[in-house]
Image 1 (cartoon, helix red, strand yellow):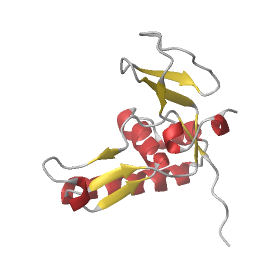
Image 2 (image 1 turned 45 degrees about the vertical axis):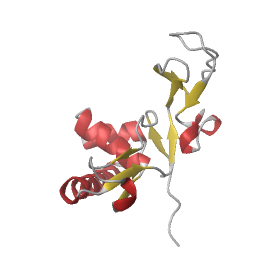
Image 3 (image 1 turned 30 degrees about the horizontal axis):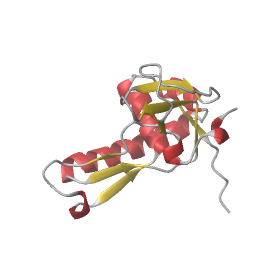
Image 4 (image 1 turned 180 degrees about the horizontal axis):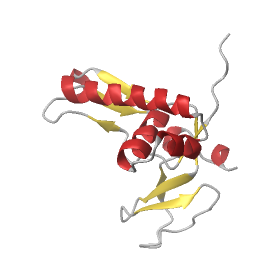
Length: 144
């Protein structure tokens, strides 16, 4: 029996969930699934230039687990780029540290801690939001 996977800490939900080559319908492409924790590994190592040690601390996982995660993520991204496949970001054993909300009225995106309750958009005062963490099935479970 395998050991259960620990939840990895993710800074915030991705704003975009899918990418594909232009000019081809998504339904005509083979799809690769990039887990949210693989997305976070790419963000930390390749976008923010964290070392594997720094990134593993940020995600609350071992350095060796982080190394396996980043290798898997890079393989999937290279397959997408080289072979023109569609990539969808979803799943993984995760909890979000922060959330991103999008105002339905003005489109303003803003980051907030998971424990904060936001009642109105700081840009237009609307109280209608798209909850990006909620779109991944997370929310109150992520509050420590």
